[in-house]
Length: 242
Length: 223
Image (cartoon, rainbow over all chains, first blue to last red; front, side, top):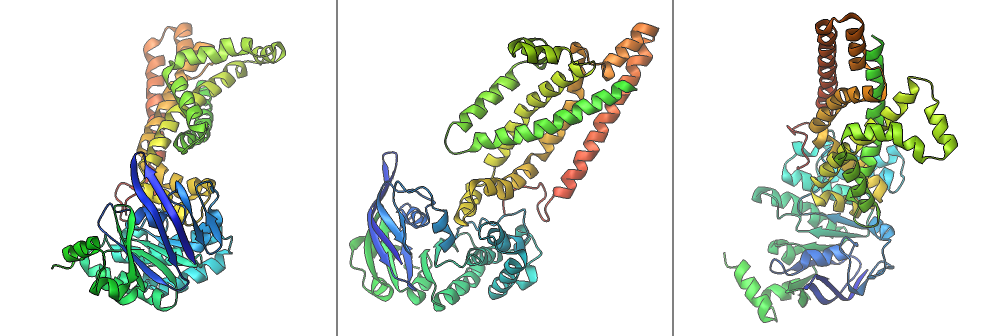
């Protein structure tokens, strides 16, 4: 489904991604973890072209992304993305947030878009809030709207960039529950997250990144129980101490 | 009170031009690459750094000479007051547009960069992204400064008297010259300007209230 081949990227003289390669199968749930500044967010944003790459190439469901490819509109329609800070459109109601890309990008009829939006908002448990504006919702509710907004375009892949990092602890689970439900339904998912419990119970595999490199790729259980690289051991020792 | 009519038509006409041109130039200045951001910069620096009075003279006296002879003659032979009104309209519209362009740019740049990323990730093209996502938020942010600009444009119309448009201030001057009742003539005009300004403020205030989002006190962009 997703093939990342020898992708590198630099900001000036600072190399954020060093020769990264990974392969993600349809229906697989992959968690990318690692210390901050390791290039996780940059890597995930290259998959839908939000970050350009300097060398290498990425294939997503038949769409080829390379340094010289600039028209990525077709790719973005099949890849949904959820951001750390939600990025709902604050001037639109919850319902409009979920319908606007359907009507303007996919040219669906208003009625069809609203029907889809209502069923997705019901699925993330927000039917009661469709007429509100984002600022009237809690962080967890906003993030669930953002997930519904991304799902509205029927993506084949969902990317999550630290979806729970901006949330109060008591709201983390409501978002993780929605993500777990999606995974169970067979959605191909790539998640940058620090939620190790989620990674262990839901992810098929873990990619561990450090210093712009993919240091280790392993089945989730194997990664947590017996990390192979020293850097992964050090990282896990730090975050699992408490 | 014919002068009042000319002041109002000049201000509202110029405001329409300024909003359209200002929005386009402001958007151009925020584009990521290409020649348009630079052209936008040149426009803004030209029109806001030359005194309004000089610009008024340019459109009235200089421009007809620069154009091909036939076009220039046609402009010079326009019946009064159109011969003054049209250059004044263009002048004030384009001058105010440069100021609005800077505000639009500031409004767009005040939005979190994630908004643009989210719109891109949903597959929006550049046109739709600006029209549906960025500009509606940017205008909410800059409404207070636009109010200021809207009030200013009525006052700036008085500069048009220098190229012969008999608007409000010129009317007062004519009355003064014919009757020598200086105090009454300029007193009335002062009050009329004041009333216009207050009405303009009222209109913008209503727009601000109508555009305000629930649970966002200042109409800001952060969730």
